[in-house]
Amino acid sequence: MKTRVDWRGAVLFVIALVVIALDQYTKALVREHLPLNTSWMPIPWLDPLVTLTHVRNTGAAFGLFPSLGGVFRIVSLVVVVAIIFFFRQLAAASWMLRIALGLQLGGASGNLIDRFVHGYVTDFVDVRVWPIFNVADSAIVVGTVLLAYYALFVEPSSTQKAEATLQEPCADGESG
Figure 1 (tube, rainbow, N blue to C red):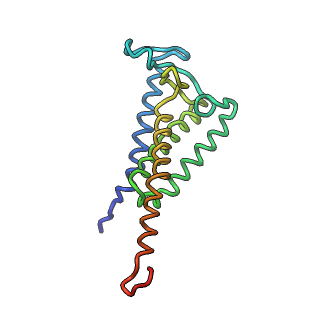
Figure 2: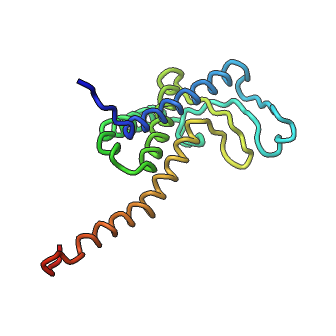
């Protein structure tokens, strides 16, 4: 008997795994090759815009609340477990929702791995006008923007279409 793979649900996990792999690989490179609290300009003409700066983050995003690292471990773990727990319902949802949650799952997992293994998160992308961040942080932010777009613009139009369908008259002239 053949089992059918639901690729819609797998997309969420594939995206998450790609984010985790890229995040952990880049952080390992930074920890191995760039001393803590130092910067490196791989492309000199980009120096005014972006550089690589190795820092440790024990707090939330952007280094906020550095003494609450344990709380952020719990919050990250809850987010990861919630996405995994509800993924079957999400698999049937919009592709945009699956991508958004895959990015968030991968980003939260990448930073959670750092918190458990190292006790801190390795950050290294320094765009000068923003706090230093990493691949996982970027995935979380992009996933959140997609999720907000979905919630504000896509889901309301889906709900309106469903409501309009319910309001259409049936063959006998009454509302459905």
